[in-house]
Image (tube, rainbow, N blue to C red; front, side, top):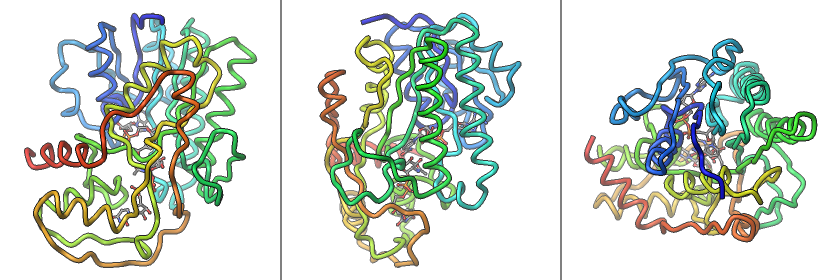
Length: 313
Ligand code: NAD
Ligand code: UD1
């Protein structure tokens, strides 16, 4: 197990990135954050002001990314256009950030002596393969520009390892939730939207019949997986699912959030979203075997803690 001396977190003012920064500081690392605040917020890292270096800027800016990566031994690459729906509306923009941005980060890392890059990939790469649960051995079948871009990032990571000896690890997150997930866009993560609706007593919309499934993982479990991916030697060059191995249907998710928050409202049903995956649940045996990772937060508990945070806003 190697120690992380100085980490760069791209997208560190975002939802997952800011929790990762908390975790790194708790483990005694120095941290630099680069973020253009397109979907992230200074308020997510305000509590760390004097403990991190924050650089407002874009990962596609080669001069900037080469400057901020200097002296870092590990890079956690979280910055991205994260919405599947936005990637369908504007594929060139999502491609520019998710692919060109990723290549800039990898290139800056290899030029500046970074030991390892841990990349945020996505379960979206599996698409609608009917085979469940989704395991890393399956052939990816992307259904959206976003999924293609995440898969492309994985291929770049593998090529940078082979060509330049840069250690890379790709983590295919399933659906992540928890405090600081921003509910304000219609394309925000579904748990953040449902929490916002429940706490303000507004009726949510479910796209399709609500029978689609997702494997929701609490953000603190995801940051722990990142830490293991950066420090365990067995992780280098591999791709891992980061999920819980359990699933819930979207209509049951609303019932659970409604019950937990003490509201009882029937949702409105809208047309299904194009590019939406029907069934999603992870096989987490590989990350368990190689990194000893097991999720610790049950959905009910995670929902309770997240609700507490939304109520405090
Ligand atoms: P988020 O929107 O909160 O975080 C993304 C961060 O990247 C934001 O702070 C944003 O301002 C920043 N950013 C975007 N474009 C940038 C650019 N060009 N230059 C610099 N910074 C930029 O989203 P999140 O949910 O925390 O997602 C983090 C990562 O995890 C993303 O790569 C996403 O694709 C991946 N992911 C998320 C989920 C999920 O369920 N939330 C699931 C799978 C994968
Ligand atoms: C999410 C992530 C994506 C990640 C992927 C991994 C976000 C915004 N997207 O995509 O970055 O790579 O997980 O699996 O974090 N829904 C409703 N009503 C709503 C909102 C959503 O019914 O108001 C439905 C959607 O149609 C979908 C499901 O809920 O079926 C989940 O949607 P969403 O939270 O946007 O996540 P994904 O598209 O799975």
